Image (cartoon, rainbow, N blue to C red):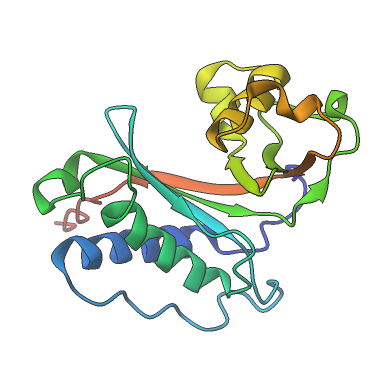
Length: 195
């Protein structure tokens, strides 16, 4: 999305909500209820991913895709799962929380990518669908890893369990999206009292 457009979602509120959902999941409590009507002009639903990192290394990342749920609900679900159910990692424990960073990514509606030459690394996220498999990489992956278009397209195919060149094959479906993002420390220090 261009910098001139207003964010259609209250990202600071979604980040606060994600933090609360991670803490609840780690402590074994029910997820906090998402607020209704986060923004009067917001779409009724949006897919979202929540990423947890520790000292710059991935600690958990889960999201929704085609979930058709309100954005607050998608963030709560993704946050709890990122902390406890990412199959690549053991569940986060309470002692780790103060070392973690958290990022919320709200996805725009995916659109077909007719020509791979039109893929813009760092702006576009990518979804590949082929042979009954599907995978997604968020836009920030290219920036964080210094990847160009070919590396992103190869990597999303590999993530789906496909040959890296699958994106070049007929019948492979590529979709792009952008992400509205908010990030910060998992644990926010309380404000110092004014004296």
